[in-house]
Image (cartoon, rainbow, N blue to C red; front, side, top):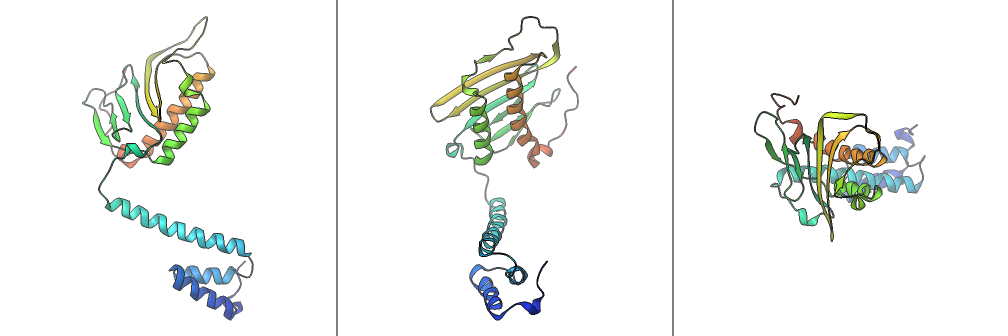
Length: 215
């Protein structure tokens, strides 16, 4: 519950004016801090000021990025990879080396767009790779089972080419067996993380849908 304006002391009013002059805060934000200064401690006041500055900086940064020319800087990434996937053939192609994504249009020619992952997104993917020991997986992943009773038709195939520092890893997986496997589940989760980022982008959402599908 906020204090009425009439209960703001001169000292608090002076603080509000300093917030406006030094930090460039709007009057409404400074007035809000004036209202709440009596019921929150100094640590929360400092956090509020930092948070407001971060919001203003984030909005300004977004505007600046929209006005800048698109630049791909893979050398600045801790992780880069090529990830190909699709039904039967790996026609969908994500490439962070050149910041591009190619979508399989099935019966029509594939479409390639510019698409860049942020350093935070790439770090998250890299950390998950470490968690599932991705770099220790065989180059060709095969589910080890004695009696396979279930096959997937049509099946998807996946290919990774991953570079991080001095580490390089390739992995190929043909997902044609529906038997459960712990490592299979971990790889599927990695794929879901990557494709989820791709599908959330406006560049991808604006792409047309294929005019046909796979049987």
